Length: 113
Image (cartoon, rainbow, N blue to C red; front, side, top):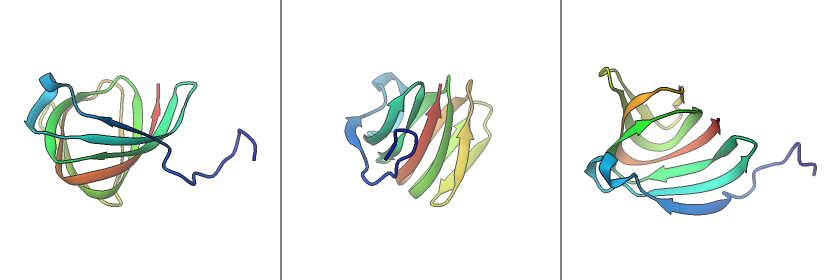
């Protein structure tokens, strides 16, 4: 199969992480990320987080599709969006707010710098 087209058959390389301590608002969220693509400013894969709430800020574009769980994303202006399995959304450069994982959440993502 060429480099231009491939089927995702595995979850990819696994990474474990957490939000920076100074960004955590509540809980002790733990991240697991399976990276599928990481080149030329394009990143995609699957991400999972355990419950907690932390501050987020984006300097890149990110498209997400929630596979399982419940999360709430709240902009600094107070507007919030509850996300559940099947929901898709885009975070644009300049977004500032919080991400709260109410129930362990898994998402597929594509990030473009």
